[in-house]
Length: 169
View 1 (cartoon, one colour):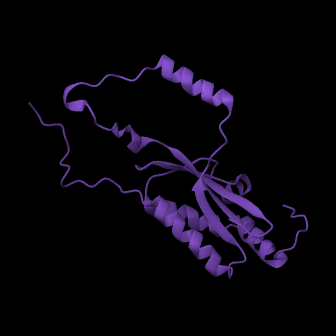
View 2 (cartoon, helix red, strand yellow; view 1 turned 180 degrees about the horizontal axis):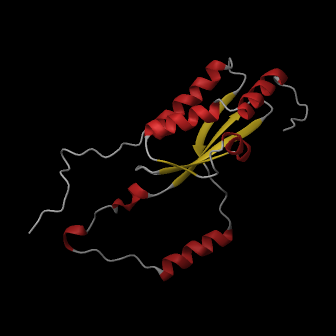
View 3 (cartoon, helix red, strand yellow; view 1 turned 120 degrees about the horizontal axis):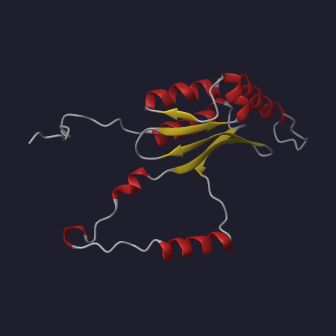
């Protein structure tokens, strides 16, 4: 019978270093603006309400856990490698904040980046960008960070410093 498996020792899967790439940009923005504008990159989280908790309980009742036997007992399900989590990239100062994009992350490419709508329109990127590699991520981030809208927002925040006046789009 023909062996259909790839040669795992010879073929490399495209590694996903997107978290490290973006975290480096968080540090770079503060340096470029003398800490007047900073960035943060973190998981998107929402407060859990009672309805969500009831939904989770109902899901567990309707989808009981499979009983594993033999050599599968005690093993962690590798589907967690494919789990998607949303992260947000925001810039901020003492007074203002602006969400630049959301990244739908998993350990394995492709991942999805959803830029601010006006930035996406300016750059004709689309609202949901499928990213296949670290290099493609770097290219997209460079376009976003160099967009007219984002540069204007950062400059405006820097000019206004710690003032509390109303920030207009």
